[in-house]
Amino acid sequence: MLIKKIQLKNYRNYSDAEVVFNENSNVLYGENAQGKTNILESIYLCGTTRSHQGSKDKEIIKLNENEAHIKMFIEKNGLEHRIDMHLRKNNSKGIAINGVPIKRSTELVGLVNIIIFSPRDLNIINNGPSERRRFIDMELCQLDRIYIDNLTRYNKVLKQRNHLLKQVKYEESLKEMISVWDEQLVKYGIEVIKARDNFIKGVNPIAKDIHDRLTGGKEVLDVLYEPNVSIEEFENKIKSNTDRDIYYSMTHYGPHRDDMKFIVNDMDMRTYGSQGQKKSSALSLKLSEIEIVKNKTNDVPVLLLDDVLSELDRSRQTYLIDCFEGVQTIITCTGLEEFIKRNVSFDKVYKVVDGSVSEDI
Ligand SMILES: Nc1ncnc2c1ncn2[C@@H]1O[C@H](COP(=O)(O)OP(=O)(O)OP(=O)(O)O)[C@@H](O)[C@H]1O
Ligand SMILES: [Mg+2]
Image 1: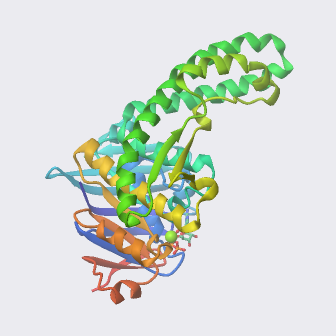
Image 2: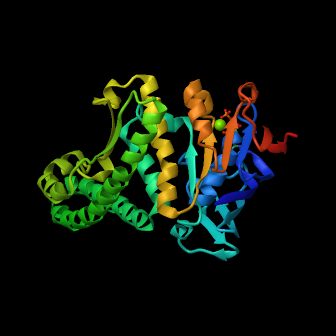
Image 3: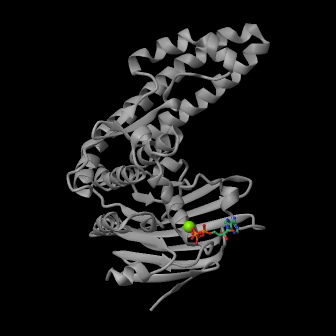
């Protein structure tokens, strides 16, 4: 797929903006706080219904305004599509595909495939398990409607169960109600665990292969799923820990506590990795997504890179730049000097200044 054009109205620091993209490489450059990331965020949001930064709609709407609009024009299998997204301060967002409103945001799944890569992703191994779960969920939610459904239901049941656990502390009689939630928690939780397990099993050989090339054969990477509880044990653990759960007013077992581990040459990178090794492993993981999306959807995803090149050393930069080949890429950076020095050219160059984007010719 290709992103042809995006139009923004009252989106963060943009009052009115339009950016037309080339089908190959595009760069948005400018000083800090001018609106580069905002453009990438708007593309990701319009394609997936979620901000990659986890921002709420009301934070995204331009200050002192009540609504924001994004219009994105894409091309897929030779056909043009338009996605309209309408963000409202006090209401849920409205989405239309080719002018036809959609009822559920999952209807967008499959139309747009985007991979966004920001410095936060390079720190996935330094950060806590929640960042690693976020990675899995962001990817799976783009690829699998059923996963979104199961995850949403799981999170809802978990919230309700935790709420009840708090109440039981003050009202013993409510204790027997917990088992009602347990049953559903286990049912949806098992589906979440299965999908995550499958996904990471697919990621591992691809990331391993990329890592082998990235490190010139020096490092062997394994990306492994570390479920908090196995499918077989889940129900038992939930049932046998009810009193502890009540005491702490929280659910101790379940995929909301899952993790992922990265093993390089038999060492767990979370504990023993050097900063460089952690970044390389994160890069291999992230780049494996391109292959995963290609394999799963028969479509080439669009790559959005938010200021990540400056975080990498020269050889990793070169590896990443080589991945742009045949993939529509939109990158942001603060300056072009490094690219000019290295003879890397872009098909479209945009300068971003204080909420306005202009073509650099
Ligand atoms: N809801 C909003 N309304 C108005 N302005 C906003 C809103 N949200 C963010 N901004 C402004 O957007 C600007 C940040 O934009 P963005 O994060 O895209 O910058 P950037 O060009 O990527 O900068 P950097 O190089 O530092 O990453 C800030 O000046 C911020 O105040
Ligand atoms: Mg930025």
